[in-house]
Image 1 (cartoon, rainbow, N blue to C red):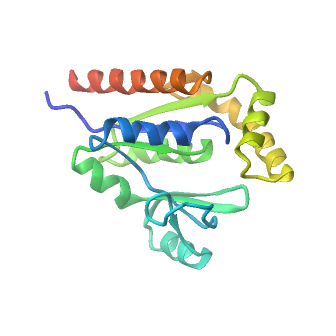
Image 2 (cartoon, rainbow, N blue to C red):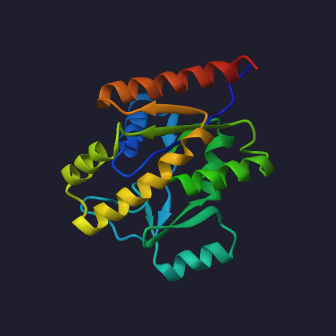
Image 3 (tube, rainbow, N blue to C red):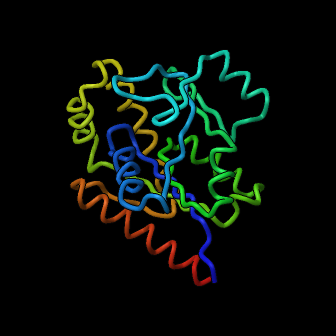
Length: 200
């Protein structure tokens, strides 16, 4: 039987490495695996490209697209808005392209609900939660990234404490170790899910 396209959702606290892992999945398995480009009102960080890293939208444009029903989900994360455009997922799954999506816990909950009603998503969703060993390790990673000031790091750590409670909702859980071990674990989950769907 022909394999079913897969939407692999990867969640975890800021600094858990989820974005890097998703990028490596795409690099390793491209063109069979592509990432879902999400929209945000957050301003671009140095080196980020509109349409590749995110769709960077003004708050006004973001709200208009929400009103037009163009998003699967939209959420407030910290002080910005994020959302997933429906056509970003529908079009690629229809072409039998596997997708990876780095998303927060709140967004993952919304996608799960959407998958219960959306025939294109039905049976294609697999969720993975990546957690740090502990919050001190996460703090070290956030400081090491050099992307956020101390107030933002504290805010992200508070959020992480809440997010960790949601890991039981996920199909798979990876306890973060080294980058290589984390990627090997995620790749193994992907391959197992593809094999399972290929033999339905």
